[in-house]
Length: 234
Length: 234
Image (tube, rainbow over all chains, first blue to last red; front, side, top):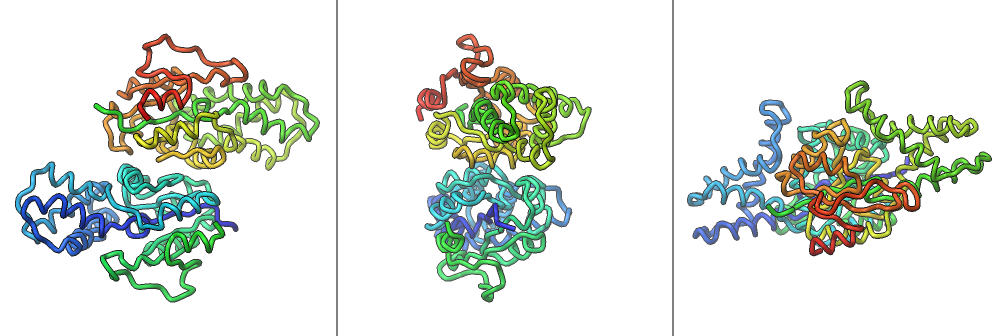
């Protein structure tokens, strides 16, 4: 079967959250007198991502949006880095920094090229409002935004991938998941999606990234979205 | 409160379904020897739109997608116009003609201009796959596709408008509904949305359209999407 739609992971794969969160955290906290390793602060904040989602995935807590989880997760690095008191409004504004992240330099052009040939969808753990505001800020365009919020749980649970096939009215084999994380691609593959790994070698800061797959692990393996577009004939 | 998002009706407001359906019906049925008034055929098909949705809105039947309803509705004009036997596949292909409609000439540019300043969302009774395929065909871009399928019932029921505010994480007063039909705007207004009426004077064929509102009925009244963009300072 031909590929008709590409579903993209967003955080890490499409946008550079580490740079964005380091920058937004510095903007919010440096005026309070904080002198921190902002890249490390961003990584510490993000390190709560899987544990917080796991509470929802296991059913130990009801679904809460990623905006909400970002706000709760933030309290942990704030305490560990001994950031002086912030008002609730200041914490809320900083939590929404995840709506204000830069795209990787190749992302906008790569997505636009792939949109000429495929339905290009966001398939993120970010909630709809988070994902659409982020796209506006990062100046990227999706044909459609799908994801965790529509099934009120989180990747890599199968419901999220299954819902994408459902809403796109496609067979899973007509959809290719694009991500820089093994766990996302492996779960998509389990649900019958094709898979494309894109390397994001600076995801957690300069040269800090997830393990790279052996060649042949996924259907496609690309250095960035332009390379993927080339390989897909876009 | 400032307007942050515009939610657009699609069929009639954004795309010219009458021209599209007349053309696609002729393409499918003329080779079978049919010589019909294709504009009238399109209008007859569309005339089943509200009655079929009403079955779902009242709960008399479970939710079925607009693609499914289009397929069922089609049997009525096919019988009335005595169209010779079509295979199931031919009927299915023709039902999906609603995914292959032209945008009004001002729509693509108008939406792009409004996307510079607002979140621009589709809020249609069309299901997600129908709306995204239609956007690709008509060469228009949405920031986000919302609509009936996400709540499994149909406009003008309040759930559809409420779900848009929910997924956009906005107060209804920060959202403006844009449509060429009174019933849609009146229902959106009931849920706290602002409203913009756009005239589509050829919706049902040359010069055939819904009644036009008295000036001042809605927050904005525009001749097309470019006029609306101008009025909104885009």
